[in-house]
Picture 1 (tube, one colour):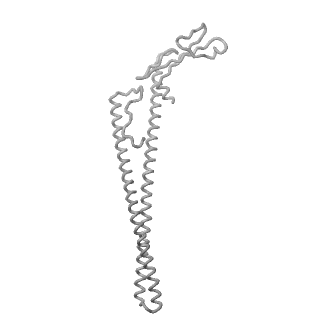
Picture 2: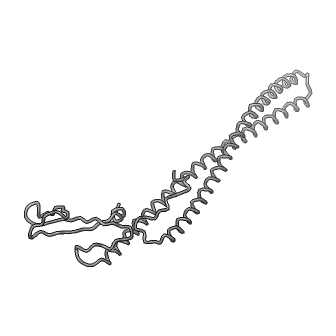
Picture 3: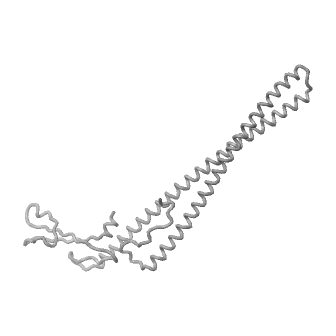
Length: 230
């Protein structure tokens, strides 16, 4: 997994002209940068994970409180209905009715506050989970972009090295290009001449018989060049 790897292959690309000391220094710097980046990512994800779990626990507490307060509101409303009926019958004073109404108002307000807090906590929990997913996606995209850019730079550098090598080679079709360190060449031989299909060119090797009037074409290619083209 690209997101959680702490180590990477420190071997230089085949044919790299850089010294081993420089390659080692660059690889060490990249390893330290990767370690710091991964540590920051993991800390952020751990914080968000803890926040989401705390919010989940708080949601459970608020749900229980919401049920309790809903029952209290129902009880106060029943009391208000009973007291109102008694007041209308002339059996209770106005102050008693006012007290019961205040009790209903207070219990309803507490229930409303709990509902609002419950909604806010659920939103916080959802935001934490979503932020975790967003962080994972952003890190994955960033690593893939870095990998793509590195591959492009490697291909471009390899192509430039080959261009410089070909400029330095002796003139002549049979001249072998100057190899880059660690590079191996393969020769492709084509013979053209004669009539019919033979005039179109046919592949050959060092053991192929050559007839008078044949033209021999030799092309050199290397593993590095093929990798750069791909």
